[in-house]
Amino acid sequence: MEGKSAFTGIKDIKTQPLSFFLHVIVSASAVLTVGVLFAIIVFILVKGIPNLKPELFAWKYTSENASMLPAIINTVIIVIAALLAAVPAGVFAAIYLVEYAKRGNRLVSAIRVTAETLSGIPSIVYGLFGYLLFVMKLKWSYSMPAGAMTLAIMILPLVMRTTEEALKAVPDSYREGSFGLGAGKLRTVFYAVLPSAVPGILAGIILGIGRIVGETAALLYTSGTVAKVFENMTGSGRTLAVHMYCLLSEGLYINEAYATAVILLVVVVVINAVSGAIARKVGGKNG
Image: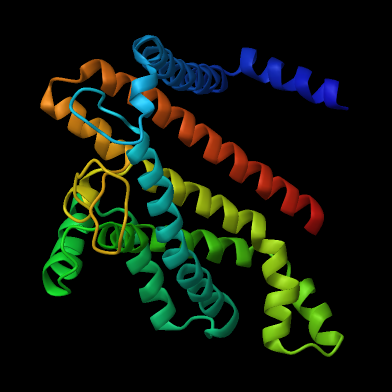
């Protein structure tokens, strides 16, 4: 049957000009997308790998070594801090919208529209908001906590919407079965519904991590550009993306900036690979 279906599809492409045209467009788009991605990766690797040197991983940044190690450590810290603030809030908000709020509620519709709107706001606007609130109003000055909270607000709509869709994808039979066994609403949510939605939730978290790691505009206004490891709650620091931006803007460390781009690419790939492995493992257990 599968061979017959494939043969029929090929026959339709040959006999129907519109189907053939659409097939060409889709194939060309796929090849173009993969080609552009491959070209960017090759360009970064070719330009950056020859400039990777041991001094780039020194503990302290100086004008001689342009070390990126403090920025790598700061990136890990700010990712963890932003996720600790955004993930619980986003997940609990999604649980309320899906499991507790009445269907057809106007407030729920308004929240969803607002979340989708916030997802499309440029990051520099979040940076300005974080600057006015955390740096100026709350007197946090340029600090890593100010940057982490700004990024948490920025990825909150993403986490909430992906969690909401993951919860909606859980069959109602799971809820009905849990209620039939005598479980209450809260127990049903946390023991029957939420575990089944974990892979979808982790997918949203992975997207949030990618946005945090690659963010620069919002952090320039909040966490600052000090090239040292985060030491205290009022300390400023730059992430890997901000470090690369600073090296390029100064115009004196172009080769070091290419090397930083390689490490940034590796960090993103590793984070996505680890997160994806965790999501598959959790999904396999739930399945």
